[in-house]
Image (cartoon, rainbow, N blue to C red; front, top):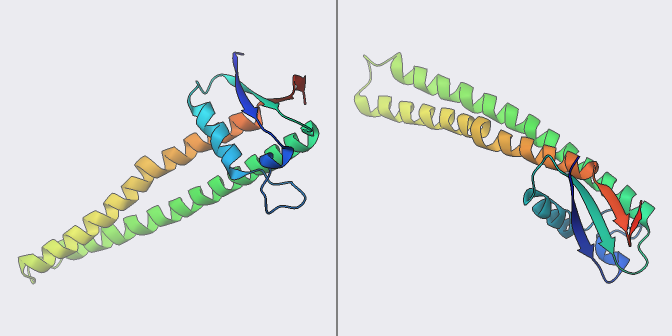
Length: 161
């Protein structure tokens, strides 16, 4: 499998971790953003090798924190996808109700209320479609990216962890 390197230079090991975490088990969010940004510049088919350089880096601790952080991000991704599904279903049903409400009593209402009901219904259906067409595929791409980072090899100062 083809690989590519993502190089990370730090001055102090504490830069890798969230400054509010005294046990240093949580990665710095900027680090994950940097890694995902660098990964998106490459092909998803290639395996990443994360090469860390700096003073006093505990490779095993770093690998553990990275895996924990990525797994938490994957959990957030899955929760967001479930929320999107429920939101999409709710909006679609609301849209159908409003469109039907505009069509069924058409003989008894003037054209303005019918148009308002139709617009509200169309907007709700459009928002449901936006979740399905735009948001969920974005979450799927992020999930694949995070899984690739989870599978990445980690090297510290030339030694594989």
